[in-house]
Each structure stands twice: as structure tokens, then as C-alpha cells.
Image (cartoon, rainbow, N blue to C red; front, side, top):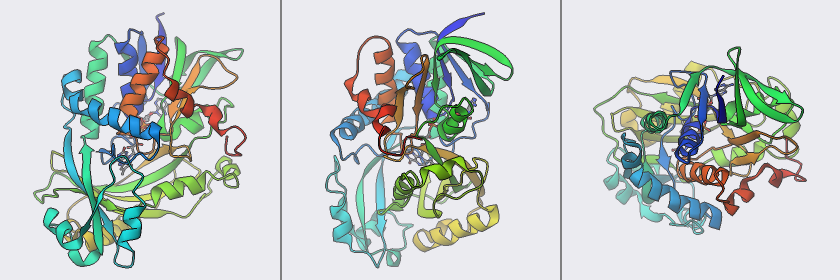
Length: 396
Ligand SMILES: Cc1cc2nc3c(=O)[nH]c(=O)nc-3n(C[C@H](O)[C@H](O)[C@H](O)COP(=O)(O)OP(=O)(O)OC[C@H]3O[C@@H](n4cnc5c(N)ncnc54)[C@H](O)[C@@H]3O)c2cc1C
């Protein structure tokens, strides 16, 4: 039986990028993904690359590396990611103070510019001017998420990587060392296993008694088929509620709730936004919930009606379009940074998870992780290690 240098669990953006980068530096890599037809957070993502939004030296460096990498990724992978740079319009509601909201972005690598409702509506003709007091504007990167995964995966296969379509149900332990995984009843052995299972990372690790400070939201959205209506920009609220919800749901007093089934950790939120992919499909959303049972969702018809009602206010032309409700899990860690590295007190098992808004930073991080594994240390990864949560009351 072949033994791999690395077994990567999960074929979303995290697993696809990391398996490619590990193979590129010369490792023998097996990618294990449970669904041949993607049904994950990457599949339903808007694909926005917020390279401009970092407010710390770490995120600013990664944002710059990320946009540089995306600009050449199609060429490198030999398949299109459909990368482009789009106008991002961040809406400000009439009862909010535009100046104060604009100032809250001052620490960003490239702070967006405050524009009037008139200018925003000229930029995005589908936008209903009376719905907003003003908007913030900047250039945002964009890729087709499914194409990006496809491009990474094809390049990985060309490098000699292997893919197994199977669900990992257990790890193979020898004392405190992991020597492989059990997937659909078969043992696959490897020197290192890395969990890139997105919103399922927590449950997968818990099943082996490992408690890692990773959580998840159930995200709900509407996807339309390819339509003739043309949305020129990405439209989102300037005051996104999702990140605050993630921070609230990982507070020390909330952490014990995550181990109880059928609980809602926080109240659900709706961030009203929309994006159109190159092929004409629109993604309209999004509701986020923190339900402790991964398979739980909101009620499909009620949620879809809520999202349609909300988008009608800002982008009325989108409200009547045909579309299907979808739900998926999005992982997060609570401090807006992913969790990367070896799991303490074990050997051979790592995580690369907790990415809640990763299109800017994940591809360069996958590259840093692979290079470090190949012997080129990357000190920035220390800031993303699991042990940053020790003593905070949130490490589990
Ligand atoms: C509506 C929406 C809009 C978004 N917009 C943006 C955006 O504009 N910009 C941005 O940066 N981010 C955005 N995100 C977030 C982003 O899409 C996700 O954070 C990211 O795609 C997560 O990638 P991942 O690889 O960590 O997880 P996933 O894409 O969820 O992949 C995890 C994979 O692991 C597999 N898996 C799980 N358990 C097992 C197992 N036991 N065995 C085998 N395989 C397993 C799953 O099948 C899945 O394929 C958005 C998300 C949503 C839902």
C-alpha cells in the first residue's frame, strides 16, 4: 500500500490550495474529499477577494501577497479562475452616519472611499438610490469559486497528486501519533494528516477526542441560474454583521454551548448582498446562523422569502428572478484568523481551517505552509497556531 507524505482532508478552497502547494514543493499528497459534486462553503461563496481590508501587518502582508498571487494564478494553474477586479459597493443605510462608518475602515490597507448615493447608483444602475444614505467604494478582487477549485485540483493531479472520493470517519492512531485516516472503510497511511474540512473540522476532530477552537455558521443564500440582468459590482453592507456574530459566538461564556446538540449560540443575522459570476449566475444572501448541530438549517421557504424581501430594497431587479435556496457550513475561529498548524500534544496531525473570509489570504497561506513543511520556516505562521487561544477561555 502506498504511504503518502501528506493526507489532506477536504477539497474546498483550503484543501485544494494546500494539496496543490504541497505537491508543488515535492511531497507525495493524497486529497480525500467526501463529495464528488461540491456542496461546501467554497461552492456557494461569492468569491470576493478582500485584499484591501487587512488592518494588521499580518493581514496586510497576506492581502498583498494574495492579490498578487490571484493575478497570476490562472497562468500558473493552466486553467481559468475567472479572476477580475470589480467595483465593491458597501451600502450605508439611511439611519446610519456615513462619516463614522467610513472612519471605521481607516486602518485598512486600502481604505474604501466614501461616495454619495448618486455616485453609487451611477456605478451600479441596479442600486435603488433611496435605500442608502451613501456608500463606500473600492476595487475588490473576484474569482469564480468553483472554477478556482477545479483549476487547483487539475494542477494538483498534473503534479502527480492523488484524489480519493471518500468520507474520513476516523484517524489511525499509534499512541499520540496519527499515521493515517480511515475513509469509507479503507485505511490510507501518511506521515502527516491535515484537516481542511471547513465547517466540519470541529466535529471531525471531536470524534477523536480533540477539542479545537473551531466553530461554524450555517450560511443560507439564493442562487439564480444564468440571467440576463447585469449586476456590475459586488454589493454588500458596509456594516457586516457576520464577523461580529462570529466573535460573539466564540466568547468564553458561549464556548460550552457548542458541545450541546440543537442549540442556537447567537441570534441569526442577515447581511444583504449580491454578486454575479462571469457565467451570469447570481448569488444573493446571506443569512448566517450558529446552530450547534451541523445539519440544522433555517426553514427554507421562510429564509428564501426573507432574503428576497431584503434584496428588493437595495437591488429591486433581483427580487423576482428564479433562484434556489442553498445552505452550507462556514468555519471560523472567533478572532477572524484561521487556525493553522500541528495539534498540540499529538504528532502527525495538523489543521488548516477556520477560514471565514479567505479568498484573499488562503492561497498565500497554503504556499507558506507548504514551504515551511519543505524546510523554509515562515514565522508568520506562528501567529496562526492553535496555542494562541490557550488561556483565553476560548480554546475549545
Ligand atoms: C454565501 C457565502 C458567501 C461568501 N463570500 C465570500 C467572499 O466573498 N470572500 C471570501 O473570502 N469568502 C467568502 N465566503 C467564505 C468562503 O466561501 C469559505 O470560508 C471558504 O470557501 C471555506 O473553504 P474551506 O476549504 O475551509 O471549507 P469548504 O469549502 O467548506 O470545504 C471543506 C470540504 O471538506 C469536506 N469534508 C468535510 N468533512 C469531510 C470528511 N469527513 N471527509 C472528507 N471530506 C470532508 C467537505 O465536503 C468540503 O468539501 C462566503 C461563504 C458563503 C457561504
